[in-house]
Amino acid sequence: MSRIKRGTTTRAKHNRILDQAKGYYGRRKNTIRIARQAVEKAGQYAYRDRKVKKRNFRALWIQRINAAVRAEGLTYSQFMHGVKLAGIELDRKVMADLAMNEGGVFAAIIAQAKAALPKAA
Image (cartoon, rainbow, N blue to C red; front, side, top):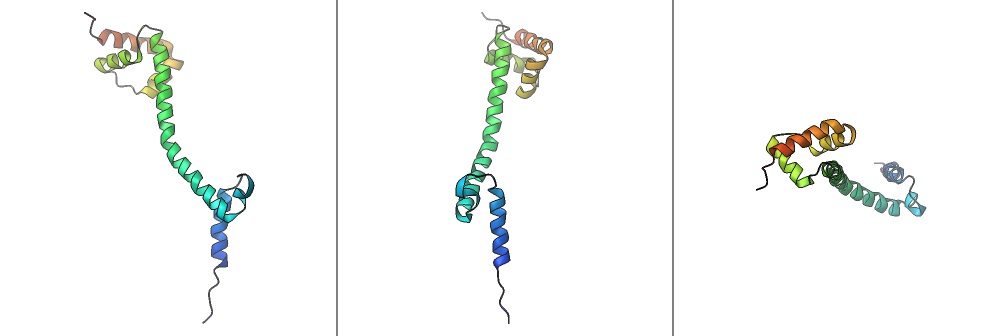
C-alpha cells in the first residue's frame, strides 16, 4: 500500500494564510508561523471593531442631533424626551441625516418635540 504525502494540503493551508497576510510588514507577510499569528490577531480586531463601529456611529448621530437641537434652544435629552412624548418614531440615524441635510424638516420635528414637552412650572 502506497503512502499519502500531504505536502499539497499543507501548502494550500499555508498559502491561504499568506494570502490573508498580504500587505503586512516584515516577516508577518512571508513566514507562516508569524503570519498565522498576525492573521488571527487581525481577525480578533475585525470581530471586535465590527461592534465598536456601531457604537461610534451612534455617538456620531447623537452629536449631530445635539448640535442641531441646541441651535433651537433645547438639549439632546430634552429633545429625545419630547420626541418620545410626541410619538415620533424616527431613529437617530434618520434624525441625524435630516439635521445635516434637511434643516427645515428637522426644525419641524424640533417644534413638535417642544410642543409635546410639559410646560415648566
